[in-house]
Amino acid sequence: MARIVSLGSALQDIYLIDHDDLAPTDIGGAAILGKILVGSKVDIDKISYEVGGGGVNSAITFARHGHETIFIGNVSNDSAGTAIIKVLNREGIDSSYVNFLERKTTGTSIVLLDAKSGERTILTYRGASEQFGNFSEKDLDLIYPDWLYVTTLRGDLDTLERFFKYAKKLNIKIMFNPGIKELEEPKKLTSLLKYVDILNVNKSEAAKIVPGTVLTELLYRLNNYVETVIITDGAMGGIAGNGKEIYRFGIYEDTKIKDATGAGDAFGSGFLAHLAAGKSFKAALIFASANSTAVVSKLGANKGILNGREQLHPMPIQKI
Image (cartoon, rainbow, N blue to C red):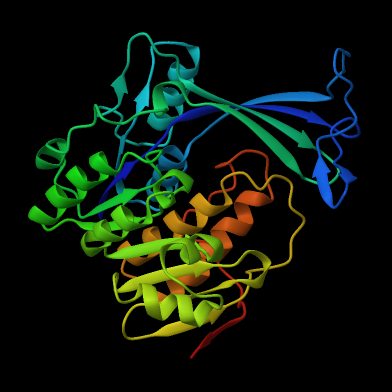
C-alpha cells in the first residue's frame, strides 16, 4: 500500500431533511428551493450531523482502502472541529498535520435535502477552510508520501504552486481535482499542470481549461499538459487516458440517488486508492465509478465509501 497526503477542506455538514417543504419548484425552466415563504416557520422531518469537505472525504477513501493516510487541512477549536478530528481518528487517518486556527470557526455546510427526490441545496460557510496560505509545503519533508492528492484550495494558486513544486522536488506524485475558484484563472492553472501526474475534472471544467465540446477532443488537448486525464460527464459516464490506454466508460449502475454530496470526491479518490494499490488503469476506473455510486446511495458525503475488497460487477467500459 501507499502513503497518501490528502490536502483540502474540512467541513461539518448539517443536514436538514424534509419530504415535502424542500421539494424543488420549477419557475421559467429553473428550479428553486421548495415552497417556503419568507418569515414562515417550517417543521423539518430530520436533522443529521455529518462531516465532509473534499480533503476529508478523499482521506477516508484512502484510509478504508488500507493506505497510510495523512490529512492536511484547517479547523478550529470548536465542536465542529472536534467532530472532524474524531472521524479522522476513527478512520485511522493521521490528523497530526491539521491546523487549528484562532479567530475562525470550523467550516460548516447546511444541506437542505428533499427526501423524495434527493435534490439538495447547500449553504456553506467556509470559515477555517476559506484560506490555505498557512499550509507549509515543508511538511512533505516529514511525511514523505508517495502521492499528494489535492482538491480545491478555493483559488489559492500560490499555495498550490508551493506544494506542487516541492512535491516534484521530492519525487512525490500528484493527483489534482481543481474547483470553481481555480478554474477562474485558467492561464495560471494551466501553468501548474506540468507538475500534475493525474488530472480529474468534469466536462464543463475541462472546457474551461482547454477549448473543445466533445470528450475526446477535451481529453487529447488536456493530455498535452498532463499524462493521465479523467473527464467525467455525469450520467453519461466519462473518458480517461494515460498516454497508453484510453477508455470510454458509463456509470457503474443506475441507482436511486439519496444524496449526491461527495460523489466527485468519491470518484477521484477512489481512482487513486485503487491505482496506488497496484490495480490496473481500467480496474481503477471501475472502482472509482462504484465508489461514487455507493456514496450517493447513502446520506452524507462519505458513509458509503467502499474499502476496495468488494466484489464488483461489470460496467460499461470500452477501450478506444
